[in-house]
Amino acid sequence: QSHHYGMMLGGANVVYLEAYGLNDCTICGAVTLGEIKSTLLDLRRAGKLDRVKMIALTNCTFDGIVYDVQRVMEECLAIKPDLVFLWDEAWFAFARFHPVLRSRTAMHCARKLRDLLQDPEYAAAYEEQLARDAENPPTDEELLNRRLRPDPAKARVRVYAAQSTHKTLTSLRQGSMIHVFDQDFDQKVAEPFHEAYMAHTSTSPNYQILASLDLGRRQVALEGMEMVARQVENAMQLRDAIDNHPLLAKYMACLRTSDMIPEEFRASHIGQPLRTGLRAMMRAWDSDEFVLDPSRITLSIGRTGYSGDDFKRDQLMDRHGVQINKTSRNTVLFMTNIGTTRSSVAFLVEVLVSIASELDEHLSEMSLSERSRFERKVQRLTSSTAPLPDFSGFHPAFRDHSGTFETPEGDVRRAFYLSYDDANCEYLLSEEIEEKLNAGNQVVSATFVTPYPPGFPVLVPGQVFSQQILTFIRDLDTKEIHGYSPEIGYRVYTDKAIEIAGAG
Image (cartoon, rainbow, N blue to C red):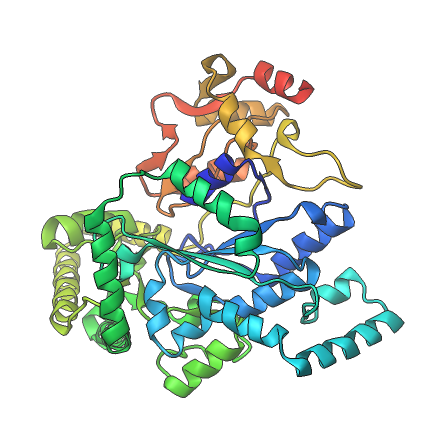
């Protein structure tokens, strides 16, 4: 969520890109390269490409979906050669210390891309491609369907990676790093970067956190490869233990790569590269648009009759002291790290077996009516629900109407600060919003609305409500929704405030 606030504070006009969704699990996937290229080409046709400054993407996602970082940057730089890339690697700092995982990290790919652009053979191949395109200029549709190559004479490699070191390596809480590979840093960025850093952080550093970061960095420099290899091995052992246990397999299943990443994004067509051997895994990581971080295990639990949130709170945390961070409607996410031991894996398996055994015993003693209720719960959790909502768009009052045609960017900062005047806002319940939508009126959010899970905003300031968003939130099995109060509803702009904002 910090990136959304960062965009707001930076005064950016934001274009939100659609990620593919896994609706059966209520999990948000990743943004496809086709979606990114299509948006850039649309902005170019609208005459706004010069205003595009940065692309921000999460690598890897909380659920473990990893981009082909180098290819994304190559193809985007072919359209806009001075783009800045911000890769959110909050949960991926450890990947630098594994020979396969490293190949899809921001800093590694930035170096490879710089070397590629300086290669004379690449420059010659690019000139040949340029000559062919001059004879037969490609359409936007053709550009979408082929691999694009950046101009080595124009492209600049400008890459930033934000890592929450404390999440996956050794550090005190809040220990984090910003990694920079920017060929224009000294010339264009150094001064405003340091000014921004001083403006938004304390000028009195926490030496304990800094010291822990130094220790963590030294630790992985000395033994990082061994530690991460053990982390991946423990994750594989956990998968095998769950899927090969007859009782656990009755109620639970570890989602495979083919469950998390649609076939069209897996050129290798390997359904389980994590279990097919290192060579198959390397082939998938070399060719597929998306791959799955092997240290994450998404466990499908719909057949237990528990929602992800109930399973986390009532079973794992309250009864067994197992802490996890991420759930969805019918899954829980386990992550191994450099501190995971074989005994902790064995303990988790023991806990899951205990839960499944109690459930099995309870089912055998149920009355017919109880059994019927249980089966209805399972049916609800294992059948498709309301799809993840698409971004419904900014209200015209917060849109930029320049250009040859309408484009989707919105002024989040203007929308955010408009809500600081209470007279501009009111609270509406879901039913009241639905009534207004059915009457043909628009309702505009005055704040970020973020349900946990899935943990990403479904509404941002200035965005219009849609029936799809209301249905999605209503169907979620969670009580924690930031930006929403069950008693008073959603904070939205009054019709008068929107009218004035549009006139201004």
